[in-house]
Structure formats: structure tokens, C-alpha cells
Length: 360
Image (cartoon, rainbow, N blue to C red; front, side, top):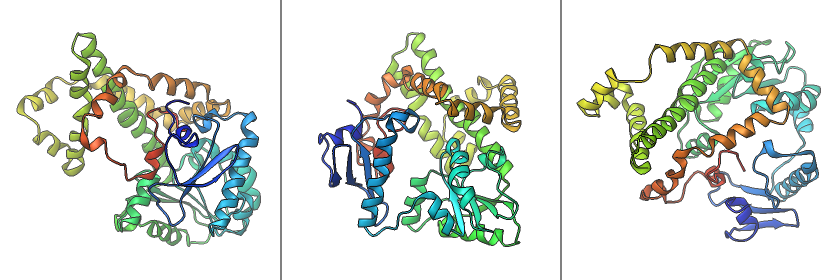
């Protein structure tokens, strides 16, 4: 595919240090390794995301994992199938995307768990909503970093840590809390701190924050603000700067000193407009409360999992729709104007971002 980074690497259009290649896959070392051994195996066939896989891709996917296992062993790493690894483990950490956890647990984890082996999670979704139901003899705990995996790794490697929230759902032997905190310490998280929570609280607040404030709040607010200004005749470039570009500045200030520092840093005119002319009113609060109820009663989880189990038709359509919003017709050009956006990204995972929402 023309704009796919991995397709360009596979075709040789982007140079890479190759470890292996055959007629189906290419393997190359990561340009910014996050571990002693860090390589990627990619199919030569373009597949936009895991959600785009079909039954016809089964043989290719199997070949990818076979190559990974072979090369990992050659690099001195021990590789085992999930079922075999689970059978030997005292602690099983499940880090798959929410929609895949239940199926893998039923097929490979549950039948092979050692008596008393602990189950660990980084998000409470499947335990809270009952998609995974471990027997009572297994300790169940959660260590949920407040940042994505590549940031957790980057901070750990730098001698720092990402804060976590921790919870215990089942404690049959009275030793689950020490185990949970030991796992958090091993991630480097206790360098920053841990907050005690429950699977219920973590799941419901995490989903609410994503849906109504962060992803479903800020994203849509910026998008709609851009549309209102451009539909009123203002230049798209000016609209972009005013409703989107300056967002990072405010977020950085709020991160440093809360909403008060963000407001303190802005003009009196901006502050007065903030207090008196906002579009966020009690109707928004009512809508938030409605969405929170759907999270609490499991309606959202049910809708999401049913769509994923059906091949994610709604999810894929929404990714396509929101990946082509009008603000992104001008965004790439303007972001390229800033020198700090044109350097090499130190996060290796960011090399996989192609500009599209669907993960490659």
C-alpha cells in the first residue's frame, strides 16, 4: 500500500537492517531498540490492522509466528506456545487487547493453569464484565500503568517509572497484595507511585475518561470547532491553529500545575471567555451521566464485544470515517512547519504510525 511504512520497508524503498526474508515475510532490527534483542517480523502482504485479518490470512499469520519463534531462539530467547508457557508459570500476565482476552483465556490459559497460579491484568475490563471468570483458588490482581506500553518501557530504561493503579480481585492465600506490589516494582512503577483501586473502579473510570473527556471529548470538540470556523468562511490553516495546535500548550501547562496554571498562563480575555462563553453546560453533564450508566451496566462492553466478535464491521467503518475528518486535510502540512515535529521519534513503536487510525 502506497502510504504504509511497512510496505515500503518490505519493498526496499526504506532501508533497514534485515535479519531474515522469504517470499512471505521480512524481518529487520528495530531502529531504536528497547531491549537487548528487538526485531520486527512483518508480512509482505499489506494488512491494515489485526481487525482486517480474515480466515484466508491464517496460514500467513501462522508463518509469521513460526518465523518469530525460530529467529527468537536463534537470538537466545526462549519461545513457547501460550498453553505451554502457562503450564509452567506461577504468574500469568494477560496483556492482549480486551476483545481477544476471553477467547485466548478459554482456549490456552484456563485449561493449563497450575493450581494456585496467579492471573494478572493491566486493565479490569474482562474480569469486571465477567468475560473471564477464574476459579476461586487463583489469585487475581491488576497493575495498570497510566501510560502506553512503549512509554512504560522508555521510562523504565531511563531509570524512572510510570505511575500505576493496583488492585486485587481474588486473594485465596493472603499473599496476593505483596505479589501485586512486587510486580509493580519490577516495572519501575513504584519509582513514581501506586494508587490502590478495584477492578470495578479502574474499568469504569478508565472507559468514562476515554469516552467522555479524552478521546470522545477533546477529539470531537476540536473537530467540531474546526468545522464551525471553516464553515463560517475562515481559513482552514487559521482554524487549525486556534482550535487544535494550541491544545498541547494548555495540556502541558495543566499537567505541570493543574487547570489553575493553564488559566493563569492565558490572557484575561481568554479567561473571561472561558468562564462565560463555554459550550460545555449542564446538557453535557447529563450526556456524561448517561454514558457512565451504560458503562456501569455493561451496555457499552456488550456492544463493543459483539461488534468485535462479528468481525468489527462498525468499528472498522468508524475508523475509516473518523480517519478522514476535515481537520486532517490541513493538519499534516501545518505540523510539518514545526521543526520539533520533523526529528526522529525516540519511541520505537511510533515508527509503526502511518497517519491512519487503523494500526498496521
